[in-house]
Amino acid sequence: MVEEGILGGVTIVQLREKDTPTGKFYDIALKLKNLTSRYNIPLIINDRIDIALAIDADGVHIGQSDMPANIARKLVGEDKILGVSAATISDALTAEKYGADYIGSGAIFPTDTKEAECIDINYLKEIINKVNIPVVAIGGLNENNINSLKETNIKGISVVSAIMNSIDPKKSATILKKEYDYL
Image (cartoon, rainbow, N blue to C red):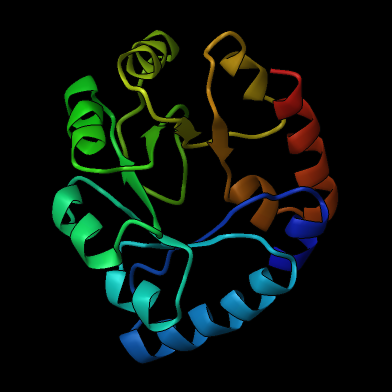
């Protein structure tokens, strides 16, 4: 499914395995790293800096309840991508100050992949306007609602279910990429 998504236009892959034991997570991450490397697609590991470093992932993404961004930056170094989830302006500014390369902001719409409060599109615009690093919209995005991000100046979208639950992940990724390119 991931390969089909890449063939459809996915430009970055994030691996998120909240309840997977470390050994199995490592095995999955290593296989995924081999796949993404074949296509020259960056692989970001969610939350687990140890796994990211062990497989030489391209970066790590952390949330507000994880390790502070400044400590994460020290651990992964300056040459790895550091993403931080931020649903408030304050969290976004702190993440930027502590070395984040991008902010993941949302949830924009309800999602089954993570329990999160939704933020208003206008508030998303405020976050985007307050930081000097890219902001990626997260949460419940699909081909039917991505147009709601018009005029937000968003630098990317994070999509899980719209591709991974699709009967044709390549086609879904292609449609999402095309819709995103029109924003």
